Image (tube, rainbow, N blue to C red; front, side, top):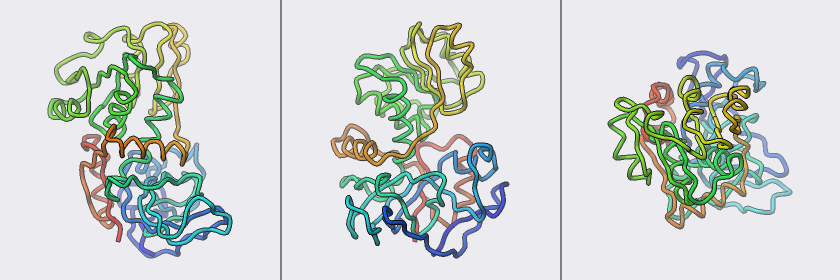
Length: 309
């Protein structure tokens, strides 16, 4: 099958579009013929070797952590799916990825593709959807009327998190650049802070939850807008626990765990019109180097999707 692999950690030139063997199917796996995948910042962080202290990979490595496609084969113990089912998934990060024509995935990490979404739209959702769910619902325990700040609202995770928080009844503030103000308003944001012209710490106070997608000084400053016993949840790195104790807030880092049941719930929300897919750019799989280059700018609007085949 055609796939994009890396044979060493490094820059964009390490990405090679080539031919490799199809994945082996375990008893609980389904084999998905991939119609579309997507690019996430974690992909190029893995490529660069930033996560090698957390994840022990063997080379050659196929990157990619989102997929939408059609089941072509099922393992002997599979009970939830049949050949021909249209599905989407965020596979196990420790197995080979989705920049490929086929991927083998445990059935418990797979969900039926929402009928109202194209393969490209469905492929944009698993990683950002599950990340948002596990940060806002599982970790932060978001409730009706909570005041939530979501940093970088026009990005892949941010644009999904705004919609999820609104669908769960929260009041949502977000930060973005001038050119994306109208976009994040269209997602339902109640308060939009143009970081080029405003300081969010001067605009917001007594927030129940801050969703940090950036880390660094932005995260440190975010403690100042939280109320006591508020929650700071980060996908950038582990927050400073001493500072959290001083500020009397709960703070933590969430590293996504794939979950087919949660993904199915997210799929239902898209079918109900509560959440929409945000595909910003569509490219071909063989244009992977250009796609990574765009992702690394941190200025891609919505998700970068790759058509396969």
